[in-house]
Image 1 (cartoon, protein in one colour):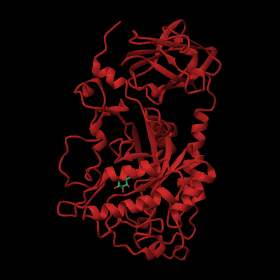
Image 2 (cartoon, rainbow, N blue to C red):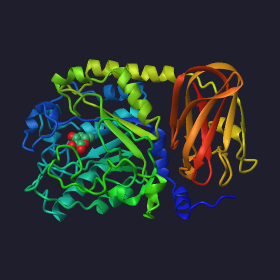
Image 3 (cartoon, helix red, strand yellow):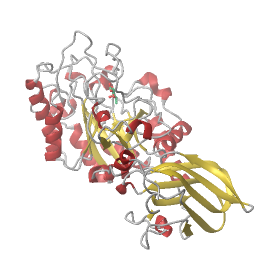
Image 4 (cartoon, rainbow, N blue to C red):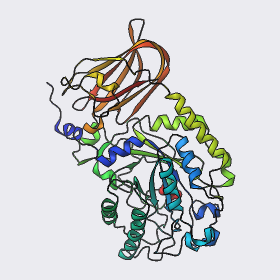
Length: 473
Ligand code: FUL
């Protein structure tokens, strides 16, 4: 039996928390950027905007939720407060909110409407709360602002039902001579764990990692297991857009290699810190009429989906309701066509009912047939330190296939470092696809081929191979 390096062995033992496992299952969900910026035609408000401007007369959160669901997304994260400090809920700690606006005579609550709409259609709800607040006078005072921020956070954590996510943005454009606020991250996290223990804390938080750009680009290998310091990378309030004055940092979410053997060999403590791709349907995050023509076409969206969800990263697609409080026609049509396209793409799993074999297995309970069982606790396990183990599928007949979906059993960690997928053509194995990590989900796409048998070879793994699902389309 070959001896595995102790550091690699340690990496192979890092596993996700229950809340992260639940988050992995969501795969594709929506951001909504909506607020005072929607009414001032800007992306970053100054904090000096009048709440009088906020009046989305036709606001219909049910329209948002229904479109999100029809597009194939499973949750929504709402910008409850962006950098301008305007709150979409009637916070008791500031007047800079919906309660000072003409909308519903100051009696409205967008957060409540959005949370209820999500519940009504059966998707999850999460909150975005910008730590950087350009309106709040106590910003920059240290403890006083931290108390204010925790009070607002508590309102969101207690009044809107179960949250699946709290999204903290690292952006801060105060500049060199601006106010400097030291955030009490640990205090924020403790409050979230206490009041919403199932919610992941994303970006400036320990559970979900920012992909490192806002254009939907993923790395060749998105590792879930990375050195711990990446969970701090965004917390320095200096890492996002428009932040030209920030000093270059040594550790960055944009690093190309986060978790390869070479990276983790340095022996730093390792954590489960999976990636999320945040990208907007339009050019900007907020609605601007003059960006109506920038709505991404279906082909681009499908590509984004395959390159994120299909490459072990979740996709957080941003929508921008307009001044009426509605998702505009063009955006809606594109989203509905995306939902329809995904349904067609994954309409019938041709692997169902097939026969699986394998080169090696841990024991009688971990055979290859398990990968066809929808029960997530059943998986193929190769046994320890295997030499290029494989599983093979016999579809029982010839089928035209152009996609194979693979899932590692991540409950037992992320193990696979390299794989090749073959199809049998006229008695010979032809390479269909190859890649590095599989992780939570890998979608292999290749030119359509008529095949009956396919073989997945695990070329390199950390300690063993554990595959939970093999699907063919
Ligand atoms: C960035 C912000 O500055 C943008 O306005 C937007 O909210 C994006 C999701 O994150 O850091």
